[in-house]
Length: 464
Figure (cartoon, rainbow, N blue to C red):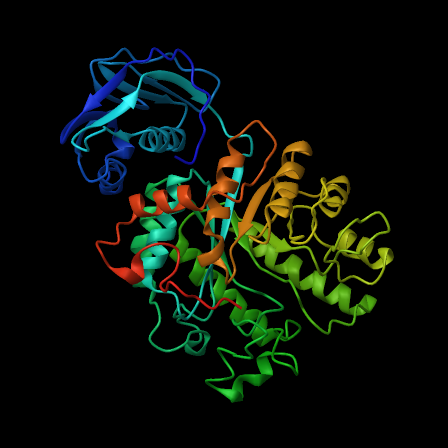
């Protein structure tokens, strides 16, 4: 069990159930994924059939529905039945996930039970995002499994970043050969939406134009077609955003991704680690003009722009720890903040800062900006500092990043989710691997396939 729920009215009894169940559920949850999750979380001992209702409820057995509260959802379990009531469809999904997380198997492995209780909950962090990198080596089943994992953990958003792994119509060289088509990915995105997850499309609009990690030197475009070098700076690492051809291409990419990912509130344009930027006032002005142009276009489609903050931050004297801040002085940081449109959201990644609060995030918010704080699976103290900063300073949200380390850090994803629903400090525990593995096998059963079991395809995995 991942979540430690604050339960009330514990009677000591249990609701016992077996192989065939019928539940009355709000019509929006009468979808195959919720039946599959029931089967997985009930240890493959039980199947459920849904009958629809127009009310935002789930009920099974003989039970009076609890009264709605100010919380997102309420769960009631008696010896005779189970019920969930909620304020919205997404809240009901989260209440259903909570119910699944509470299912236990009896002592001889022949039946199932839920302990009698009543609980009401709301998240302490509203926007709970995960940034998921899809590499050339990623397989389709891994994407599906991870999306289900995040849905079961009651995240609100997943940022999908395809690293040379999605085929675009506008430029074939943006994808390595034989990787995913939009038709491959579309059913997974639909399932994510069914689980209450909003997909945030992402494409790097400045640095990381290689769609590869700098340490390996791969370039998805130039290693397939060197004649396209004019689209990039002389190193190939950054897009030549000053060129009309590049702006046109990026516009086409955004449109394709928005069409694929469906309706949503955000688009992540990256813009981190643009090595070699000269920080002249002219260059800053040109870059901000480009980003504002992108932001305006996205806003016309109902989306807000998210970008990484490292290139515009200046490391001030009161920043304790290893802050990432590339801007050379405070004057040019102020120039960025004055030129970039006020509705642009900054995602602040400070992976090596353990002190609360993350001062750069606080400074950005003090400057009137919406801020998302982005931890990574580096160590528990760093993640805890990020989560506490969001809670204590009422930031826009959290965005847990996974990069290339998901196989060793997936339990950070579950621990961050748990902390986002807790009123306590956002302590990320180092002992969460067992609980994360339990959730993973319940959302996507390996069926005895060694490479699909656990966090990694191999038992001995060389992560660099």
